[in-house]
Image (cartoon, rainbow, N blue to C red):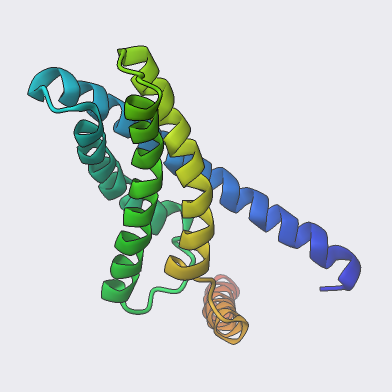
Length: 174
């Protein structure tokens, strides 16, 4: 790819990645907030404890979405290693997210449902920036260029063989 077209292509790839991450993340936010409010109503847990449980539920949903939608084309080396990294970075994100909620609840004395949801949403926003960076950098790493080329070549070779077989079948020798 020429230098002139490389940057727009890279930006396009990044925009698609951000859109997919956002779609999974939006679903995770809905799960997180719904679980948070349901847990608070049903269990009577304190605000931050209910939020931690809700965040854990959302983390499970997000892993599935990221692995099989957002980053399905990424390296699939050791799934145990990937899951470990995901859980470590998710735990850091959980602390960031719920740290904001904790500060609002106990520092600003925000105790109403609306205030708790605003603080939780703000915490999710701050933690999302960290999660996007950490997941794409450490968890769902891009395939090395050489492997990507080899994978593409093997796909094209297989596709080329199928095309030749179809042509041979439709144009039998006389």
